[in-house]
Image (cartoon, rainbow, N blue to C red; front, side):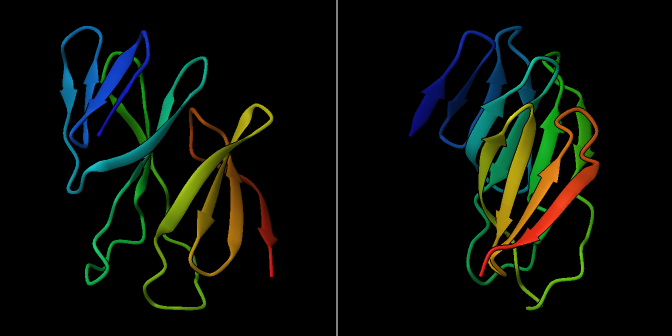
Length: 116
């Protein structure tokens, strides 16, 4: 699977920036969102792996700006399952049916909502 924008490509789960730099992660990139100063990526974590902090903010020159901080979850294994635009912020949805709204350049949580 591949996803292409003018600033980067996701090729076979790898983030490849337009400057040729590749950003490495412990698991493949599942999806991404473009913001003015950062790319927010969610990793595809295998079901048996324990890696809840699977969302990162990346600068357009390839620096990892942040990794989502550990949160208190209902279940021990509760990685983020999707990301979305929430206005100028990023929405991170996890297995516990919780939405965390974060600043795309810092990863700071600005809102939290339980959706069930």
